[in-house]
Length: 390
Image 1 (cartoon, rainbow, N blue to C red):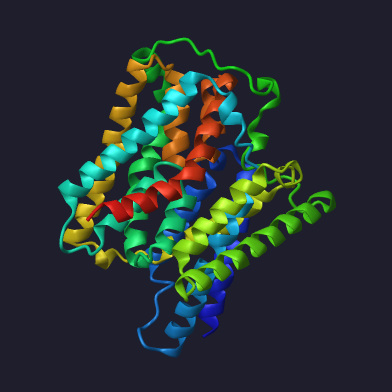
Image 2: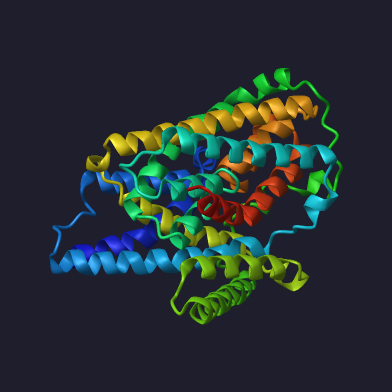
C-alpha cells in the first residue's frame, strides 16, 4: 500500500520537476513539458512500477486514486488555460492567418474522416471516439484530447495507446521543424510575411506562453487562487447542469459547460489579466499526462492497436500535406504555415520555440492565436465528429 501513495506522490512531484527543468534548461524547452510528461509516464508503465496485481486491495485503491486525479485535473485545467486568452486578437489578424487557420482545421477534419473509414476495425469498439480525440488533439493539442477522452468515456488504455503513437509520430516532426525544417517550407511557400501587428511584436516574447518563473511570488499567488476558484465554480456549474439535464454527472455536459463559461470569462479584462493561470492549468495537464501515459500497456498492442497507429499516422501526414496545398493556393508564407502546423498539431506552447528558431517574431501572434482558437473549438469539433461518424 505504501507504493500506492509513493506513485500518487510522484504523479504530482514529476510535473513540478518537469517545470523546474523547463525553467532552467533550453533543451527541455525545445522538447516541451507535455512531451516530457508523456515520456516519463510511459517509462513508468514500461518498468512495471505502476502496475499492481488485479483484484488486490492495493490495485483497487490505486485505481480509485488514479481515476479521481484524472477526473479532476482536466476540468480544472481548461478554465485556467483559457482565462488568459485574448480571443479578440484573432479578429485583428491578417486574412492570411485566417486562411491558414481554416485550411489547417479543414485538413484535419478531412484526414480524420477519411482515415476513419479506411482504418476502423471491429477489434476497436467506438472507433468514432478515437476519431473525435484525434480531431481534438490536432486542432488544439493535449487539452482537447484529454477533455474529449474524458467526456466521451473513452477507455483509458485506448487513450494511452493513441497518445503513445501520437507522441512517437509528432515528436520527430517538432524536432524537424525547430531543427531547420522550416527552411524547406520557406522554399515551398516563398511568400512574404505581412502579419499585421495586433500588438507590438517586440513586446511579445515567450513569456506569453508557459513562463513558470515567479509562479509562487506573493503578487501572483493571489491571482492564481482566484483563477482556481473560478475553475472550481465552473466545474460546480457544469456538474449542476449535468445533473439537471441528464440526471448524472455527464462528463460531456460538464466539459462543454466549462469550456463555454471559460471563453466568456476571458473577455473580461480582470479575468484575462489574472497572473499565471495558464501555467497553473498546464501543471494540472502535466499531472493528467503522466497518469494517462503510465497506463500504457505494451501487451495491449495487437492488431487493433496497430490500426490505431496507422490511423494516427494517416491523420498527421495527410493533414500536413492538405494544409500545405491549401496554403500554397492561398499564398500563405512558409513561416506562417509552420507556426500554424505546430500550433494546431502540438498546441500554442510549442510556437515560441519555433518562432525563436526561425527568428521571425512577426508570426508569433498568428501562431498563438491559431492555437488558441484551436483550443476553443477543438472540443466542439471532436464532439461533432464523434456523433456524426457511425
